[in-house]
Amino acid sequence: MSLNTQTISSLREQLSAGDISPADILDSLAENISKSDVGAYLGHDLDCAKHEATSVDLTKPLGGIPIGIKDNINVNGQPCSCASSFLENAYRAPYDATVIRKLREAGAIPFGRMNMDEFAMGSTTENSALGKTINPHDVCRAPGGSSGGSAAAVASNTAIATLGSDTGGSIRQPASHCGVVGLKPSYGRISRYGLVAFASSLDQIGPLTRSVEDAALVLNAIAGHDSADSTSLKQDVPDFTEGLSDGIQGMKLGLPKEYFGDGIHPAVREKIDHTVKGLNSAGAEIVEISLPHTEYAVATYYILATAEASSNLSRFDGIRYGNRVENPDDVLDLYRRSRAQGFGPEVKRRIILGTYVLSSGYYDAYYNRAQKVRTLIRQDFLNAYEKVDAIISPVSPNAAPLLGADKDNPLQQYLADIYTISANIAGISGISVPCGAITSETGSNLPVGLQILGPSMGEQSLLRVARAAEVIQQS
Ligand code: GLN
Image (cartoon, rainbow, N blue to C red; front, side, top):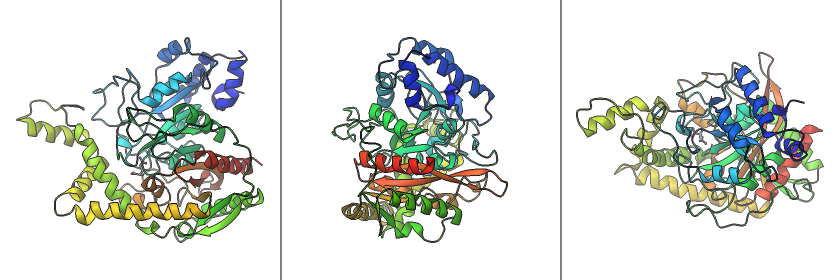
């Protein structure tokens, strides 16, 4: 079996036994990348990775495993472009993000920069200014986004596992559209030091993998408090692989009635229903619950996320960061023209919207009100977790969209985030697990993901439910 198609756990066994070397895995990936037309990578440096591989400790939990990194996470000495022409050839990371340091400490080798929507704003990876990524299951379709490169690489066997970031679904949704596992840990579980900030109260880093066990292995390596990120929580990091296959007997799983109304594609619904039946047969009790403020989630998210983005992205001005225009008249002209030239249309739209909702006279009407609704949405989840251990839903109302489908209609695209954004608003944990595929009009098989939402810091039981869903899929 070729090495590039395998899970971390199976490669680890062979590495430990001395049957293969990390360089063998890297070679197998590089060969597949050179043949692939998926476009998952913005770049990779095989020589550098092989050099690193000579000194990794193969007794460590991720010893010798290459991990692809979304291009908004700093990897010392490498470009970190956020898929923006503003940063292209203008910025090289001067340090390792905490997750990269931790991956290295666990023996992993960061390998490759994965394509994404510019500054992680989008749902299809089409907002990348630096490359096109297609869905490995259908060349006419998008891989999802914004961590589209991270998901497509795992799905196309050009990566073993990758890191992505999730502000409103950007790990779970591309994982769903590409048929891989994508975990958004609880807010505070993982340090964001070295992640280029989009919306700081929502952003989380997490793994995209071939199996639930692999997601747990990567989470083991990257979780934990970090004094460089004051939002990372001082919580013990258990071994997330422990008890993974203990089953879900006696667990209570909630189906939010607001998530199963109009708008969900019937074929997607069928896949979710089938898996829910399986979870029930595996011993879980299924109960209907209500998350009454769901209808306000999209509006709340797009106010808060754009407000935070407008502030976070002010550092890209052509002076502190980013390509600078030539011969400016004065400093204002330099800022204006550098930003006009550097940012793509979606990023500009978000900065304008975010600046508007924070501006005097509108702050109370929009930003402040959205903060209040955020509290209500968070409370919905706290109430729900008094009754259930985890919540089950679709990840997306539809399977992967056709490339260009929402080109002129960003609002339509925003609405499709309905099932994923609440987890970020509430700071809870969430995962997408493949639960089958539906057949498109052209005969391709489009993966569908099941979303499982757990309470804040509830990753252990979340992963157990995810593993049970994976078993149903494999049986
Ligand atoms: N699709 C959402 C957005 O465009 C989510 C993005 C993300 O999670 N980074 O904002």
